[in-house]
Every structure is written in structure tokens, then in C-alpha cells.
Length: 145
Image 1 (cartoon, helix red, strand yellow):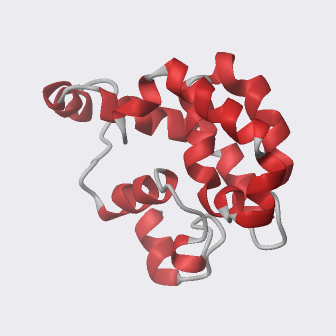
Image 2: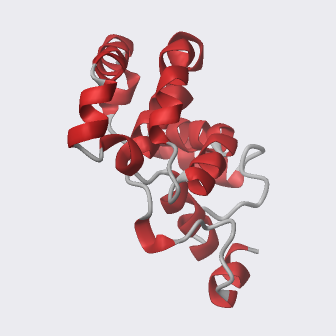
């Protein structure tokens, strides 16, 4: 996770740029359908300040191939925020949280945890071609369970 997510002014400037240039970017670039997970992370990190700026961008992110993944990304906002806060903590407090009350027996090194974390923290849409919550791959499902 980039430390730039923490900078509120940069987040607002980025969203203002995207809002101002939405029509041009839709015509000439795949920014919204491809990189909406990175844009949504701004909402996860600054929910009170950027929500009104992101709402007009959501229709630009929705498409025939992205609507279901975008829907799940929006549902996963609390999980995304939790993972982003985890990256923000120093390494030693993460180890304490793993075995302390916050961890509650959660093994952060388990393959299932890493698979979900990698999916939620992605910056590009369509990676792997699946939505992890809708996969029929038994190996992946057994790993997540």
C-alpha cells in the first residue's frame, strides 16, 4: 500500500482531476474500468472527505465486464480499510495483534488469509479473471474456508 493514500490533499486533488476529466478519460483511456480498485481505496482511507467526490465517478467505473467485481469491491470497503490500517501499523504491533485479542487466532501467514488480502488490496480490476467471492475453483474455495 502506498503511503500516498494517507495524504488527504493528494487524494482530493486526484479525485478532482478524475472528476474534471471524466469524459476525456472514458474516451481515450481505460483508467476507470481497469484501475477502479485503486480509486476505491481512496474512499476506504478517507471515507468522510472523499465520498462526495467518488460518487459521480462510480458510473464511469461500471461496465458489462466490471459491474459484479465493482459491486463486490464496494461491499468489501470495510475489509479494504482494515487491510490498509494493518499496513499502516509498525511490524511489531502487527505481530502482537496476530497473537493478541485483535488477532483472535487468525493466522496472517495462512494461504487463505494471503489470498483474500491479495485480492482485496489489488490495484487493477480483472486480475486473475475471477471475483474471489464467486469462484467455483474448489482448491481456492477450500483455501478460503
